[in-house]
Length: 214
Image 1 (cartoon, rainbow, N blue to C red):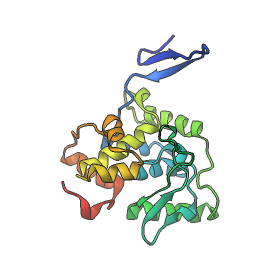
Image 2: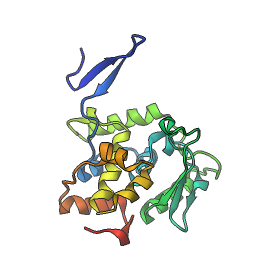
Image 3: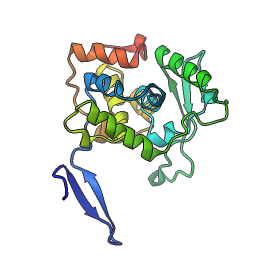
Image 4: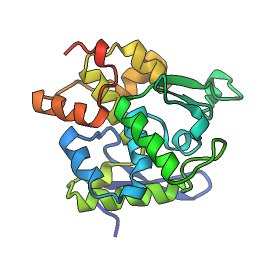
């Protein structure tokens, strides 16, 4: 029986696929903190990477140790989305800052797992990440767990730094979006209170510490 929160669409060739009714859902900070506690330590790194960088799942899965500059606290995404509408043949690489906490976390993770500089850090499939996400959401007792996909973590990242007062153009450059796309898909009104702001700092650490305007 089809669940009420899922709609079904049919392609021209007759195949069907499911669509979430609310694709714009993001994690409130306390929800994220509750969720991430449900993920085993050795599996949490992919989720920590997505929330700390705003990377798409395919972008995150291509990250290698050599893509980090731990001294400058930056990360380069070399494999990014190819935007056919803009006649791109290769995605544009993105370089942006990361927090001290996340940099230290990944440095230890790479060393502990003896990952070579040229190797991908995450040896896991997109489907496996999606399944871990769903199980974690259910264990965290997030009622509308069905509204979350991996892309909602990307939206959450954008909402958190937006709540700090970071300019939209900086968020667009970080996410690899133009301004209109940002407004259409990531530009929700901010409704976080001071408790939320404190929890965001627990999640994102000192990212944009000197540029915050809240």
